[in-house]
Length: 472
Image (cartoon, rainbow, N blue to C red; front, top):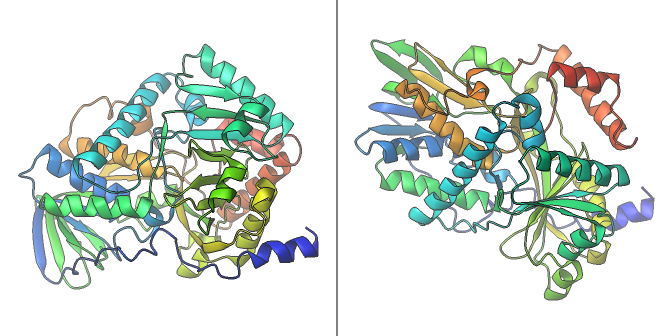
């Protein structure tokens, strides 16, 4: 990158606040008080992100008489649920290619369940009056290299043959640039119904409000410190109190699971994003984007980007940073070297937006597992259920995970609990230094493939055969 270009692009970051745009909202609700006494309930939900909130909400909708308590260690939505790009996808498998490769015999059912789950999210948003800028605009996967265009075309044809291309449209270079005009776009696949755009923080706050209205007792700034059996139920200790519960659902995702054996199945991957100032009418006209789809490019080191309700562009992805030892720390949420890289990529994609400035720059941890999609399980003789490992597509899939956890806690035999995806777990990550070494080699190999027409080296081919990977 030429020094003059670097200076020009980094100048666009001069006023960017190092906080998540979505959480920087004057309408942000006040947190609920912390737990300072002993509580008891039928169901205790640990975690106040999407996973925990959907679990508490659905539990009350299934059985209004069920007594539900939710604990959040800080504030509802402060972590991944309030920091993500707001892509609410129907896919439960981190995209159709990953699902088809791992569960070919179940893929049609998984696609049906995912579509139904997204419909149910849309219905819940309407039913509970959640104002989260929900737009069912779909998503375009774009190719920015000739080999990516060939791969998109081949994948579309394979999907058609498998009967999995319903609602998906292949776009050549002219057609994709009619949708969103970038000189880098060479082809695209538009999934018209399978993705909605929304404001992630407003969704989380709306879910909390709906839970409270239905009688869920929510305690914020109340970390769950330990879990143990207690008679016929379970006891969870907090800094100033405790909860006795008949059943417990764990939705802590990347944060240390109260069931220690589950911790090896996830690692934190730090992802980063920029948000521009609102575009003027002229700037928006220069790129089109009239249908307001979400977009993502097809590289291994990919970008995701979308319009906000007030016509800002969120631009994120590319760097996926794994900290040695798998530590989750606040200082990792801010990474200026990645912001500078992302700014340069943004203006390469949209040179017509030269002069636009960024208002916010932030990062956060994603709970990544080796198969890229959620896994599930129980402990304490079925009294505890957990879901984790959503790997960057949890905005929608966490609602499905909530249904699975409640099914497991009820001991119910359902179409969800019969899925191989639900019954089997991914391979765990190895201990350090092997985890860091393997992830570093995988990241280097993915970057090498991106610069060599997508050709995967021996390491990546071996990982593919073993069903292992690393992604955000």
